[in-house]
Amino acid sequence: MQLFYLLLLLGSCLAKRQDRGHFDNRIVGGETAEVGFAPYQVSLQYELAAHNCGGAILNAQWIITAAHCVAHFPPERVIVIVGTNQYEQPGAVHHTAQIFVHGSYDKPDMHNDIALLKLQQNITFNALTQPIDLPVAPLQEPAEIVLTGWGAREPNGESIKQLQKLSMRFVNLADCMDIFNHTKSLGVGHICTYSKEGAGGCHGDSGGPLVSNGRLVGLVNWGYPCAKGLPDVQANVYYFLDWIRRTMSGNSKCGN
View 1 (cartoon, rainbow, N blue to C red):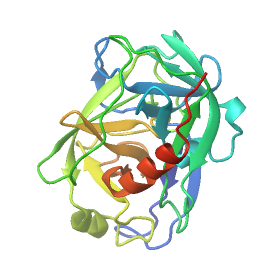
View 2 (cartoon, rainbow, N blue to C red):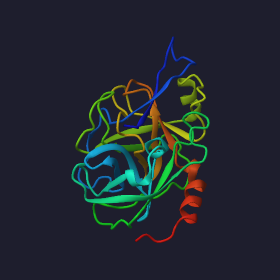
View 3 (cartoon, one colour):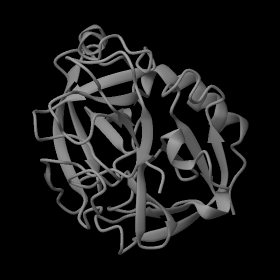
View 4 (cartoon, rainbow, N blue to C red):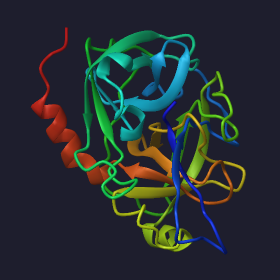
């Protein structure tokens, strides 16, 4: 399974050398989300009832997620589950028509980790299935952010059955860069979030949505697993607004 990026921090404090791997992610230290809490949340599955990554509904045709969740899969392998807090019990099942990965994904390492999925058929909206608005301004301290997902509680653990939620706070980029010893894997296309030691993203949360004031501000990219007292690093959705809008508007023919 291909999911949450792993940053191995070696040596004293935080080392300059990094090794990278993939694994699937779950929220640590969160709480069970009530039914209908995050109607924009989706589960990406490569076979039914097997959660791999999160994502969010942008409109009836389009899903947004992390590039590392889908970059190495043909569209027909990626199944999108909507309208549920239990990924094994879909509100509806949708199949992917096209995958659009950012052209500079992983250039440099761990940057531009964002992708869009165009569905074969339009989503039908209801109380449990709704789109999320895009941001209109950059995040500022002391913004509060909510992460949702089905990720594991520990590295290589199983995804939880019930959707979890976790309140996080925004960490400004300068402070985050200092914490991570100015790693080249972190830049303006990212935002950092933190809750507390023992709480954060983990396997299966990759690509999942971070929301502030009712708008999608981030997508889970990478971190030091799981919830070890360091910030999690997310794609900065505001930074990628132009790419998102160009991609959707250039490929916006109606679905079936």
